[in-house]
Image (cartoon, rainbow, N blue to C red; front, side):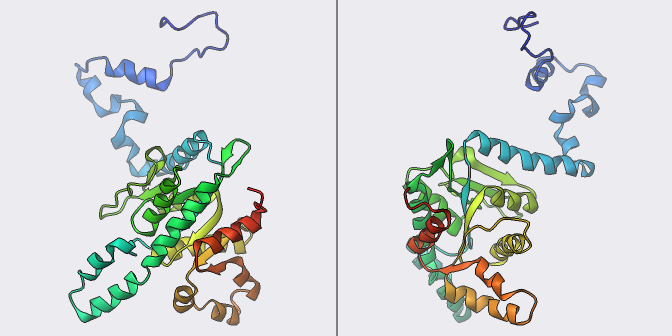
Length: 293
């Protein structure tokens, strides 16, 4: 029994906590063949064991629980999620991006990309506006900015929150090529995922509004999963704000999908095209009746 335990305390745990048990093991020398075998390691401290194929369901659960518990402990009630490209440069990086063009074809593509640099600023503004409003309900922070934690539009989102002196979330993903968290993510709200599915789940568990900026396959995946969940009734409607009508109407013929009969024309009302941060936030304010905040 340790000094801080009272055997007469009815509320005290009668078993040592896992971290205490692990400390006992670490303080003991491993001198015998039995102690040195991997099989003797505590299961929850045995990384090789946790990475086995059969333990995938356990890893699913861990990736669900860890962010959920830490966000709950941080009193985060809801989020404003910002999706978008990892390639759109910040305005001050436009010249550097253009300098990478080695052929006329490449230059044409980069010119179209840098023309979207304005969306970096709009993502930053939207995050700033939402963070500055600092909506709190029942002691929990609402519309906390949440991004994928990477560069470009994601960086702009976290940067805008930092501009307002607010914390923000980054949900990063392990990729074959390195993707470090951008420097504006609040460190204790910076998470890394192995499973795309669990990451996308966490994007939406607390989401009360989602802004979707021009992006590629990843952005499309996130947007279409969200709109499918709402269309099918698996998720209650929330504001979905597509930035840049010219881009979205060029890359996706939404009306044609309805004309082909595979969705209803009413489904086109599940999202709203916007052009700037003020317009987007005004829609969120009207949706939730936040005029007094």
